[in-house]
Image (cartoon, rainbow, N blue to C red; front, side, top):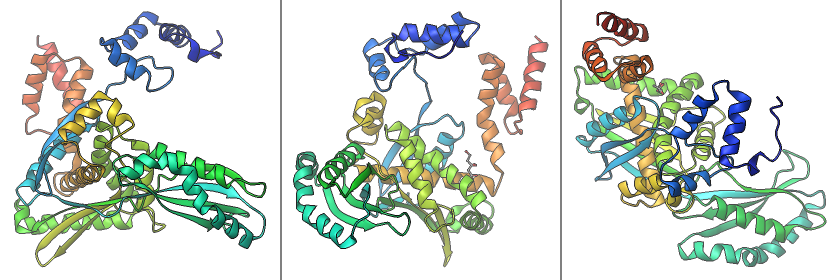
Length: 425
Ligand code: MEV
């Protein structure tokens, strides 16, 4: 049977599922049952999720966890995190508690502006283009007035509009480079609407508009979070040795891209989990963060460490264009729940919370890597996944979890223990 189909989006949900089951699976009953098992019994809620995208056939669950005891600028937070990786929430909670007794996290927003561009081609005289652009500047304001009106009331809007010559990079290529303040919204729709209105106003026989779109590279939407304490306060058997190795680990990530990517991936474990929990756009965040990490032309660490006069300081600087109003933040009931848990933060507060989650995650990873190694904690947390895969019952899970207390967890050791218990029954 041909697997090509036209008019798929017009089929009902049931018809779509049946088509998939018939064309791609042998056990159709089982596959249909799996798809429907994840439907929500609340029809209105299911409809809400169905309508987020096209061709929805089911829901894909991820765990929603919380990490309490985060002290950020002397305010305590319980941070919601959506993530499938076993150890992330546990690590965040441990590190939050650790730093809460050492002054907590200090965070500040360094800048909040965002960029959008109208990309166009022009092969005439440059001075004439400049003159034409200047003659349009006031008209851009009029063309965007209906879009910017509400944003201006909230303290945002268009901050600057510039003509940029890019012809050295690509013949005839120019941009209208627009700077925005979008306050508490991520602002993608606002920015794109303004850009399209500007492009419409600017278009002429000589100006060929190619496209108008926001940029997810937001180095001017930057937040910083930091922890510090005396080396002695770091505790443990040998705090001097710990601080030294930790510092070396950050230095390695700052000079070695292979390590930096993994180092930053660990940071994103924390940031993305909060981005998802609050209904923000994790692809935009990821793209912007990694571009920022490469801004010198060399991919490097997002965190930094300094030890001076017996003080250990560890901080992150990261661009995070997020919103706390609009988009999914107000549509998805769990995103609303997350923002409620965070006490309805402004976008700036949310930036600080996310940067803190990233810093905490990096602290946890580097502490584990430079001491016990990462697998100890990871495998301990992964134990339940292995047991679930093996189909262990509650009693077997308890016996096996107790058995592995203080022992190294490996996949084969868990399988051996599981089989031993089953076979002795
Ligand atoms: C795993 O998800 C994240 C780590 O690899 C981060 C790191 O190596 O720093 C543990």
